Length: 222
Image: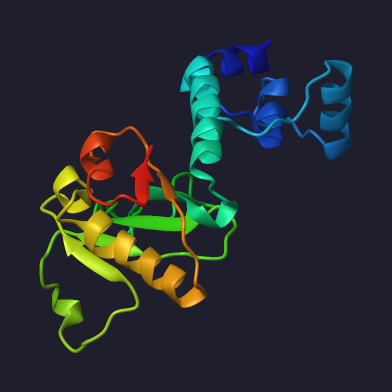
C-alpha cells in the first residue's frame, strides 16, 4: 500500500496526498467523504508526528526520572525551586516554504533561503511563577541595530557562530552572572531559603555539571 511505503521511511501523509495517489491519475477527484471511508476501511488513524520518540532512550529517561525524584526529595525542593533551561535556534530571516500561486504556475520560484540565525535560551521554574529574561546569542558583539538602545528587554551575548558554548554558560558566564543572581534576588525579596535545582541537557555546549556544582552551595545542576 502506498501509505505503508511512505510511513516505512518516516514520511508524513496528508489527505491531499492520499487522494492524489489513490486513482493513479492527476485528474482523479477524491471527496472528503471518500477519504474518510478509505481511512475507516483500512483502519488508518491520524497521529501526531513524534520526532523525539524515534531517537529517545527510554532506559536513560527512566533512570534520570528516578535520580531526579531522589534529588528533589533529598534537597527538599518544591516546584518553585526546580528550574529548567533550554536553547533553540531562531532563523529570523527564514521565509515560508510554500506559497499560493496563480493557476498557470506549475512551480513557485522564490528567493534563496537566508541562514542567518540567533540562539535563544529560555529558563523558568517548574511552577511557572518565575521566568528569567531571555538570553539571545548573536554573532556580533555590537550589532548596528543596538546603536540607539541603552537598555534591552533581553540579555545579549556574542559568539562567532551564534551558538551557546561552555564558555558562555560556565562559572564566568550566564550561569554565575545571570541565573544565580536573578534567582537569589527573587528569593531574598520573597524571604525564601533552601536549595535550587537546575535541570540541564547533557550537551557539548554545556560545561560538566561538576564545574557548575562547585560554584554555589545552595545551587545544584543535574
